[in-house]
Length: 369
Image (cartoon, rainbow, N blue to C red; front, side):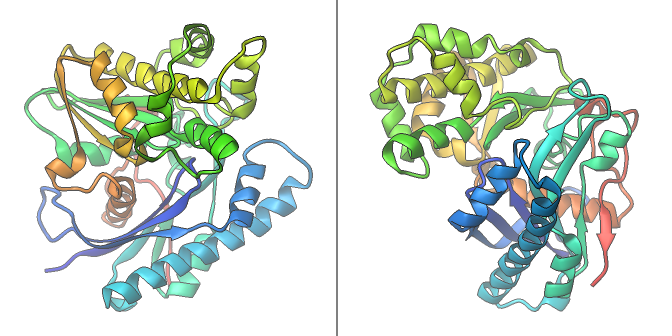
């Protein structure tokens, strides 16, 4: 019997809304089948508004309130477009799981009262689609003393658990690792920047939204002094649980590190790719000496980045999650569909060993149609 959910995801890259229609079936072992998927565009003005709220500025409350509604509308638009393309009626969908758009993430250790804020009004999504919507997944974990991120490890365990060491690395705007032990324990954390600064730099110098296949980065050479400056950021040395975002790894951080150096733009791109590869590889090596590494997210398509990662991890077999049945482009959106399913079933969606929360918890709030 079909068990249909929709997952909506917009990450720190702010390049599009990933929307997936998923059939989980009725099996206990999670084997999600993606029936339809699309990358719904975020127009330039809306993207500018999102990025503008990722750092402190004037009139934040008014801007956030309006953006919350605008994002709710575009998330609903993505959902309705997905259903139309799939030829599926909304009343056959159990629920939408919407991550929302993170505009500020201040986890424990960064401010006195930790918080995380995702915009994309679920009331609007529910009203415009007529589908039950589950959202606001991160704040329950924060309330329990956790980082509120990353949230995908519980889904990774459900989808990819095995009797040998396996790691899953999502390379989105930021990168995070899930460590699946042979004994069934789950660990993980954000490793640092993924694509966010790579995308920023190629857009700045070549007017391209991303470095296709990592070709531009591959044409440059990593600059040791800049690499050392970037990898000296305190976040990399911090012990998990930990999570991060544009609050830490942003253009200002990069520009500060470049002061006093004469750098060719392609060499900076190569260095940024090396920062991502080095920080991920360090996390993987700390987990195990060898095993399977599954990649997902936009960075999984960056051939230069994956080559740099493989050079640093010669004892690891690196492939993407599509090898195991879930397309790497859509894995995170599928994960939020799964989290909505967990919420409706009254089952936990976090991993305390990952986030540092006091206990497992049912995540998210439910917004009926």
